[in-house]
Length: 214
Image (cartoon, rainbow, N blue to C red; front, side, top):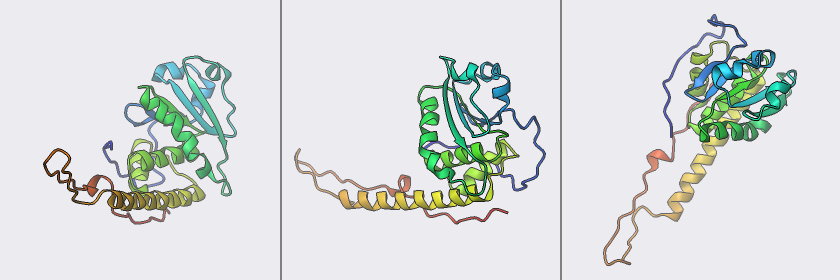
């Protein structure tokens, strides 16, 4: 499990020191979060060393210079930033290209139109899934890197549901491992006893509180 330097930013209206569409480095060194500036200026991909692009905006058609670039892996998941759109359906598909950037030592830009809601939701969910972070920790961390982040109320509810889903999955995995591997098991195959213990600290995380975002 990877560790991150945690930030804490409680205000939803803090001034963002920079152009809101420009990328912010959120997970060093490989995940940028931003708006659609790269669609208007494809040269930004070279400036930031971008090798992967995940476009989460239904209102931002892929830039053909980027989409057809053999040096860039481009995925467009056209999501709407509205209160009846279930962005949860896209989590695993989005995680695949982020994982690929990490595996290949690349750099990915996850963007929507302004880098506030849709793309931010994906990055928060990714931190929860891949870094075992609570929703509160992931939200605060991303806000510390990009202060204008503000997923809409439905997306926050879906992230809360996803947190519960991950928690239940971890608990089931822990119980299954306990069932398959008793805390102490005798192994006399080589003429001696091996004590096998289950260290649950890395596999089971105490349930975290749910948070209401205002």
